[in-house]
Image (cartoon, rainbow, N blue to C red; front, top):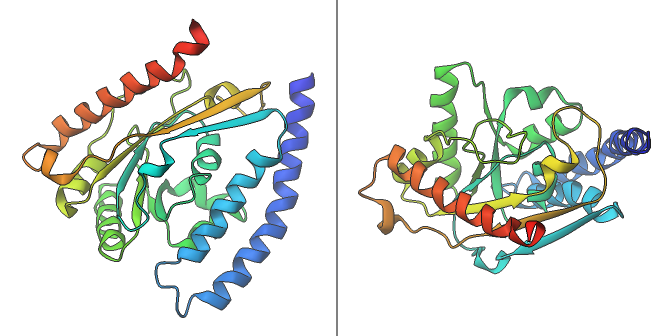
Length: 247
């Protein structure tokens, strides 16, 4: 019952605050879009929007390792494991410039979906091959213009916290653009919000930013081999991150 009441409060707060925060996002867009071609400020504001729910919740703790490995002057293909809808909030706390690759269904979420459009995030219809081709083209253009890309290579959430098989789109993109791959491993969100909308208990969200994988390390690798290699690295790190909890 306690989790249910907490969930109601959280979603009500999220709904009401989104109205106010989106109004600020729209005002910012109107003021900055003529000169902020990458929408850097718009994304920064979105990072604040996502982070505020983590910061204000007394039941949630956030631990970030390796933030210093992100070079603000570099452009990455960032790949993160996907455990929950909460991942989006948690990853925003890294506060570096990127464009999300998101399924089209998220556009239908009031205020959140509209903010995605303001930021020119990359949208994909997972049932359409044409949409995949357009997604890759949009990602290449963003990288060319100086924006990193953030992708969940699993393509869908893992409800048990284990890393699922990776699709190779992100790695094909890195090979095509000669961009470094930035692996990001996160854990804890599946414990708070798995399948459904009910929040569960106190949680520590953990993020570990790994060393970027530079293009010269994978230029002769095919996308499938590269995806399997990066998945293996991330699985090993995730296992290491969980050791203190199971010791």
